[in-house]
Image (cartoon, helix red, strand yellow):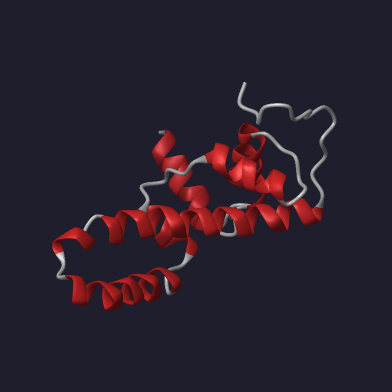
Length: 129
């Protein structure tokens, strides 16, 4: 059971505001995670005078990425406990597991909703045969 200490999650219902906040928090977390990977992985190899420009370059690179590119670059991993804590700070009390499930199954911006296309149906039939 993953939940912040002292937080009661009984009957916590998701509302539109929760969903919007969750999308913002996840994107922010992914950007921070990727910044740590890109910047901290190389900054010590740079001369001190080159670090400010590298900092700016990394921020611009990350800001230009789509959500899918962010996920790919962090290898589809994120700290859901931290996301849950950020949601709690915003006034939306949901556990890490609730945030994870809600995001991946309901509000992920690149999640395709609706019926399968003909091409997808054909692919599924071929893969299951």
